[in-house]
Length: 368
Image 1 (tube, helix red, strand yellow):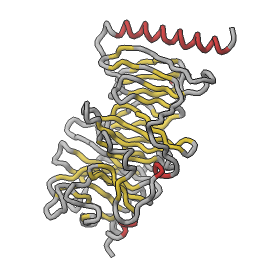
Image 2: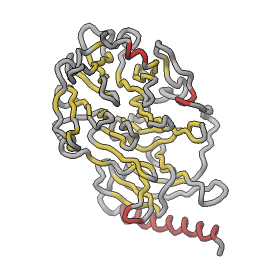
Image 3: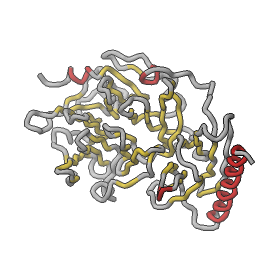
């Protein structure tokens, strides 16, 4: 028996073991496993499933590594590997777990229906000081896309996607491999994704995932300082120093800040009245160097129901008066979810779809 046959037999035995587990799991109380990840737990490589609270997990294969991606209907799990056989193969693991039927497939992605995207920023021509739609015909077409975040090397682009047919939210990623961007589904969205400046942590509201050698870790809680029943964190943004700025839709829609002191996380506190103004405030973004905070709010005298605002850090460390970002950014349509790319070159935001503009526009708003 050569190595090729050994690998095929290994796959077959894996199928049998997963099927046996599935039959047993159907007899017990169902658990909704919505997060897939690869790990070397206890020194043993494997692919695991866990629920959104990370309270329960199962191991579905003895092989880790590769990229994991859920299909948009939540019924298939793709594992991209190239080491098993020279030709493309499909490995299907059928398992009824809660309401999801999970399939694992091994194939090299080649979808002729998607346009070829090459070069920086999904191959898009950069805008000037007038906002333009980002990636027209690619994003915000059949679904609602928003809440974007790039990795520091600008080679991974994460965003939230709402399937308008099912109403479900998903975490989606475009990855640049050999200068070509490819799209895949990471899994169900747990919170609005925002990457820390070093790219090692993905914040998801009051939860987070850590970058590992094989992808992303299981979803973890930020702990009792943030995971509170009376708080509703939609978006949490982090600075290079580890400062957190986040919103709270359960407590009068306010923004809070939490800093690190001597390496210890401090109790979150309300941001000043210069920022917490208007009917509500939400979806903050703090600059990596903490020189400004951008958020959206409903205020009297705005351009639309929802406008984007900015506050600059003062020399004494306080936050300046909230400044409406002006009629080039804000319109009657409503704008939200401001974000600046890690290279500092472009400002992204939502206006029905995803828009972008030269980040130099921020400096035009700074008080002289």
